[in-house]
Image 1: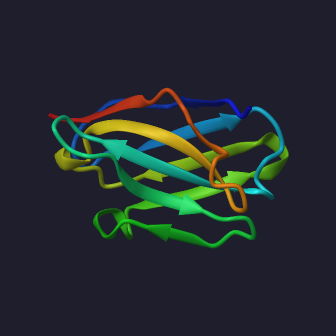
Image 2: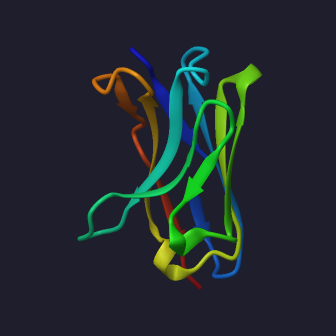
Image 3: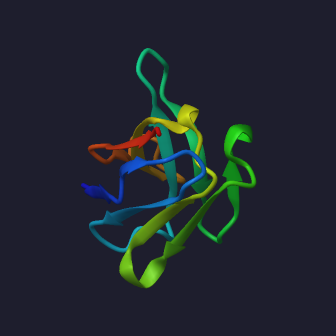
Length: 118
């Protein structure tokens, strides 16, 4: 069982920045793709960014050039640096760990609120 705990959310003005952190319970980055997803009210959960074992990344088109995902393997932490935030980035953000061989090994954090508003 993998536990994921997010932190770093909050209220920020448009154009501002936030950094989300997700701490995993154990050294899992060599086996799991780590991702950030978000869900706005009335919308489906969507992928924001993902980092794979080996370090490759992918991003939703809506956040390319503004968000950056990174990981600290030694500390079992994955970050999402969010810059130039927009009101439409407002959502609950979830950390995800997806095993690269075992699809049933898929874990979610509890979610953290990010609100972009003046």
